[in-house]
Length: 114
Image (cartoon, rainbow, N blue to C red):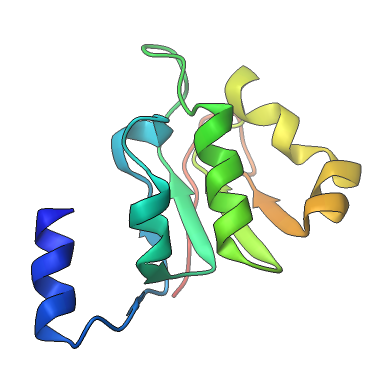
């Protein structure tokens, strides 16, 4: 947050506009906070984890991103695994107005064009 605060001070406190944001620490609930999310404008969030080590991403982090991302936010996962599968539910995606993207194979990896 200190780095962001310096950047905002240089830019006149305007929200930082991003084409995509790689969510920190694999989507840990402790690292992607409301104060951070309120300081950016972004509609595409990238989660990089297979969930095998720390059981990330945390549902709370994904929920924050969807709530902040605004209508039509896209959450991108580089693996389709137990920790990310629930977000593929079409009814949930419609209700919360987001899109979930996954790799086309089990090997993982997702290409995101900006």
